Length: 160
Image (cartoon, rainbow, N blue to C red; front, side, top):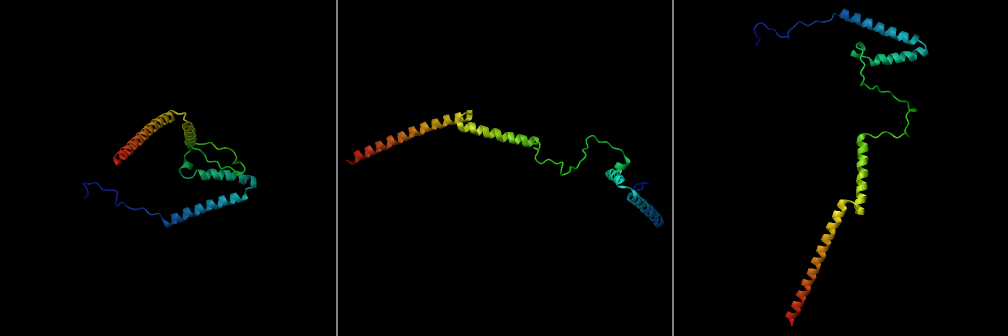
């Protein structure tokens, strides 16, 4: 239901390009490509090196980038290294996470070594607790032995 007097954007007339206009644009583009190809073939080897640099610049600046000069200080350009430049034997830098993980493992191993030697607080507490339990078990074993002996003595008296 249309509101009073307002019309929407739908239903507007469509604009079509002339077939002659399209042909003219395509011919102009082909001519430009042919000129660029002819210039490329006529240049010497030294110019080819410089033109390849220019081509890479033109490829990098496609779309809106070609229209607007942008210098982003945060953008890191990816430079490809040659195989001869890459040094495999050089030690690579570890990331922060990797360094922390290695430090954590080393400290854990160091702690376990000290723990097994009985030099840590926790190891001392464990050994003290074990000594107390050992004493309690020895006392309980002595009591059971005494009770068993008393029972045997009573049974021996009862049989007589």
